Length: 436
Image (cartoon, rainbow, N blue to C red):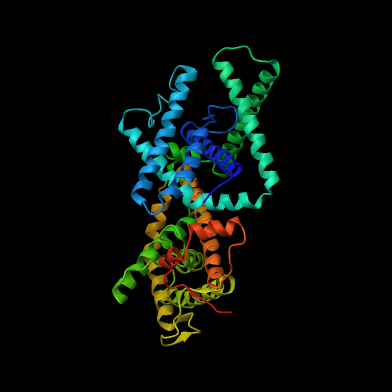
């Protein structure tokens, strides 16, 4: 996939900002205060943006060479980090990150660990975030994209000039000095406001959060992450059940059909959305029956599970024109969308879930540190949202290609290049297209 210079600049600035945000959040969690991690006054860490742009340019030339791609991830991220260290030495005379515990630039094992971690983050970003970002980029008018990138580029050059002159102790023109002071003051004001606003909100919503984090005696039980049946817990239930459901289906197909088959609902990750959403809904609806006799839970799961599976089949057929499962050849089926046997399975699973699995999983979730839990929860939600959007785009184009509809714009071309029919059919081997 070839990108224009303006698109590469757009990606450079976005990923530089994203990297800045990641480092700021990391330091905020560690220190409890805002700390600008960028070398510039602007909220940008160029190391991340440069590394991502290099990966976008180099990786397409290694299509199919997966081992070399892994090496490229590691080499480019490590080299960019090392170059950032060298630039800091040249400009300031010292290493800006020399006291960091997991510094990439130290000779300790932490350096290798951090390099591997950066490579994994880059891989996740390219697979889940970049396709959505590319879609948003294509939605912008070309003129707006050029104006935005050129404006940020000019600010970046001015910002770098002020810092360069400052560290070299050279006299600055008054206009540049004023711009530097203004940018720096705005950055500190914005950062302090953002940090204060977030922590004020957290402390207001969770007044005992600090005590829970510090583990003060007598106050440890005042606040627990995802206490009770709340949104955070339902989100974790969704991810755990989606992962477990995919595993169960994969093993079931292997035992019954003798083959290993992908049962994932999304392109990236072994997650079954049907199982995840189903578990969250059943937990929400059947939680009140946890103290009732087993037959009530079984009947609730029997009818709710069957109805849910039926509605999911209708949803995929209406919105995507596809069918993921068809039980027409099984006895007592209802329109091929569900059947009596699987309704019984839903009832048994509901009983096992409510009585045995959920109480233990709930306690495990509540043991997660509060701040860590919040960050992990919404990071996973954001990544899953990107995964679902990408999967939907790929599925729509797969259907359109089967109907002979050619790519009409850059987005269609990008999806066709990234997600060809062979890849779609490997992820969703049971996918069937409904003929109009």
